Amino acid sequence: MMLRSRQHGEQGFTLVEMLVALLLMSLVGLTLAQFQTFQLGSTRQLAGTTAARLEADNRAIDLLVAPGAPVGVLTGVSQNVGSTWYWSATPMGSPDPVALPQLVRIDIIVSATPGGPAMASRQIVRPQ
Image 1 (cartoon, helix red, strand yellow):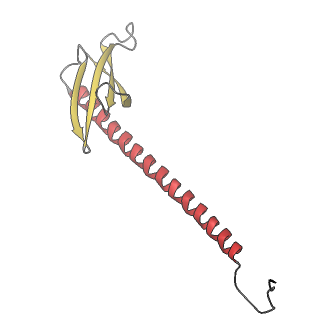
Image 2 (image 1 turned 120 degrees about the vertical axis):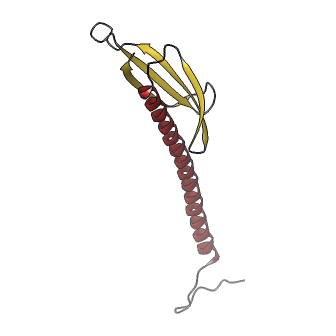
Image 3 (image 1 turned 90 degrees about the vertical axis):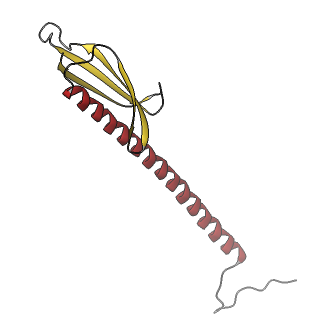
């Protein structure tokens, strides 16, 4: 059986050309799907970190307007931006005990799980 070659004026694609084109289209589609998955994960992580920072800022404000600095470690659970946050505030003493003995530094840690990794932290300095 003889294969006939294309005549001048015939148009169209061969089966091999179509398969190569479909292969390229599927690779582009898979790459776009992976990129979109990566973007969604990054957006979720950014939203969680931003909400944790808001919670840390709220705890810092509460500690700054309190009548006195805490004398021991404070811990708590709060709801913010639709999530539950676990926080701790640890007084650390004065940043400069010689020149500024009346000040106390407080380290604030916010996490998404009890005892979990810190998602946000703040350090504040206030009078005792």
